[in-house]
Image 1: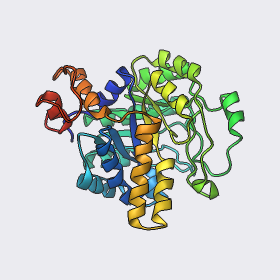
Image 2: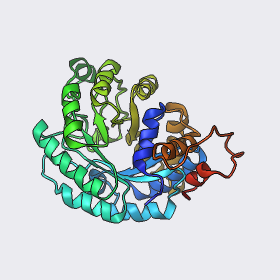
Image 3: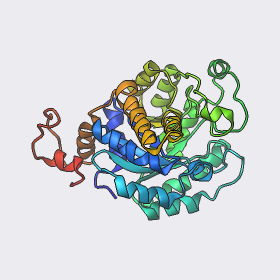
Image 4: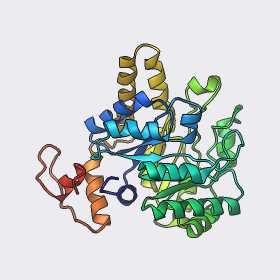
Length: 335
């Protein structure tokens, strides 16, 4: 397990108006170009896999993802996260969450997520609290979801503007306050206008509708949950101005799936080399053009060390002119 904990890195993003992108890996060959692009842009990101990506795509298994990650990881710029483990999945089937979380912890995943958002509130709280206990006993953070980030279910969605105006599925601030208090969850995934990409049918390869965030509603959630970092799922396809506004208002982690997956799939139809090129280009576009976080890794890891009270970091000169220091050791995975 990495020495600078994922919990502190995401907390550092929340405190400093930065964001950690989390890239989903539905196909194992995607991983290396994602890591390469993070390294080349000196940006920090999570490499993550959701249950549906080994069930419905070609991620293989938790172990296959872990093994692939171990072969190409760079702890200056990456950590390994287990994304959506639903209590009730997109096909409305029950999932053995405890077994999947246990396997991920045993394999060395550095953070996990449980998704009880299809359950009534009391059941979601109970299911989440159990996984939080499991994760915290292993010394890693846990993410959970409250509200309904739509898009993974079969069948067409209602028109986006209708969803946005109605606030259907939006996270309720009062429920969020109770949820974080009773579960002790580390990060909270919220619904404020964001939607997941489709995972089946013709819509799987179609361009996502351009979504936006209800910032006033996001502010109410942030006020209700205090210092708990907020997470945005369905990050592909959200208007850039809305994403950056969301980061300024408390989003500390953003999941990126559809845009990079579709780039990989289009490239794979040509050749493996083209799949790598297009994947890296898509990740670079997210880092540089959409999130504007190129060069963020040094600052994030140094701030994370400060939060953990192990070191404090002085202002840093430009990359390439960095002195040997505790911060440099951190970004090399040596602290």
